[in-house]
Structure formats: C-alpha cells, structure tokens
Image 1 (cartoon, rainbow, N blue to C red):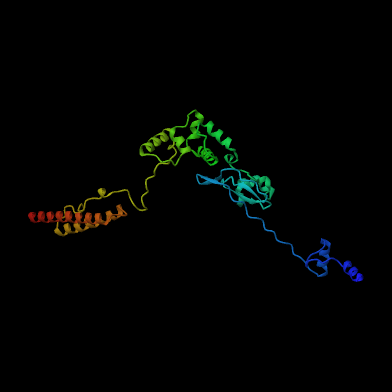
Image 2 (tube, helix red, strand yellow):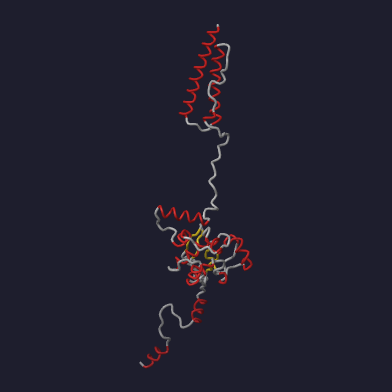
Length: 297
C-alpha cells in the first residue's frame, strides 16, 4: 500500500486540459504538434468624434482645441479653413490638407503628434478668459458660456464694419452690438428700421453690389409697343384703288413684322389687338382714298 502511495505522489500533479506550466512548455508542445500561428491583424481605431463646431460664412470652426489623441491629429487646411482628424503615421498628401498646409508639413511625409492643432483658429485655442478679455477690449458684453464667447469673437472677425470702425475710435453702435451679441433676436418693424439706418451710417451696405438690370434676350431690342409705327403709313397717295388695297396689305404685314422683331416675347392678346387696330385704320384710309379717287373722276 505504501508503494502505491509513493507511485501516485511521484507523478506530476493533474492539470486542466490545454494548460501549461510555463511558456517554454507551451512552445515545446506547439513544435511537437507542428502548429503555427499567424500574426493577428490589428486595425487602427476609428477617429475621435469631431469637437463642437460653429459655422461662420460657410466654414465650420471648432469652438475649442480638440483633445489630443494617440492615433489621430487634428489638422486644419489653411486654404479652406476646414479642420479634420488625420491618422498618426499616415501619409501627408496635398489632397488631404491643401497646398498651403502641405507646403508647411509635407516634408515630414507622415503625420505625427506634433501636427495636432496646426493652423487651428486662434479663437479655438484661447481660454474662456482670453475670449472675455477680447470682448471687454471691444466694449462688448462678456457674460455667457464658452459657445457664446466664441461666437461673439468670431462674429467680430466676420463683421463688415466693426473692425474697420473700432480702431478709429468709434465705439460700436447699437446695430453692430446687435449683430454680434444677438443677431437672431426678434425685433419690431420700428426697431428693424432703426437698426438698418444705423448699419447704413456705419457703412454696412457700402460694399453691397448694386442690382444689375436684366440683360435683353439674344436678338431682342429695347423698343416698346409705343415705338411701333402705326399701321397704314405705307399706303400713301396711291393713284388707283388697287394700289390703296396693296398698301393696306403691305402695312398690315409691315406692322406684324415690326412687332415680331421689336418684342421677342409678346403677349398674344396685345399682339392681336395691335393687328386689329392696324387693319381698322388701314381700311379706313383705303376707303377714304377710294372716295377721293371717285370724286376726282
């Protein structure tokens, strides 16, 4: 009995199937069984979500610097002013970042963490206190959260008169303050008229192009119906009734031809009335000439 116990105790302790004492034992087992392992393909994680953005004059701007990411860098195209995530160690090409930014960092060949935030607008990189200080320097309200502070700073930059007038010592008028602080606030008709007058005084509308008159269609002239000759003018002093009748028909045809050449798109009712008037007048003149000939004979 004691011999049996000694035999059992001398055996290796039982292990769960598929388990090994150490890594070397695992490799020995793998080689004995001629097993190979292919490396696992690790995909790059998707880019982080875009930061909160605001649109000014058709361009989206981040209201703050995006948080750094180990796999992506936020890079701004200086030509379009649009920013986006670019993969770290991914190739830098002109199509992705625009010719100006490519000229800045293209020699680096691949994106690195050092490129994070390149060309981002200064306001996006400012602290809340810096944004408030800008507004205070411009005598504008400084209350509000990050979104409001950023929006006011950006509206100052894109306003057509504020930065032109303020350096000359002109404090912002009521209309300029309204444009920057609350551009979408409801106003009455009287308030809207007053704001429009103030904008005009500040030069807001000086660079607005005048309304251009619509060009005439090809082949058209600038003549009107009042310029058309009265029908029957061609029937002057015929000696015979046949000549008078021919003059009548010629006048009618001439009037129709002038109408078609003078007005390319003419209301059919007016055209019909014009032709009827021409026929009536020409008929009267023809009859008068026939009577005159009869009296002469």
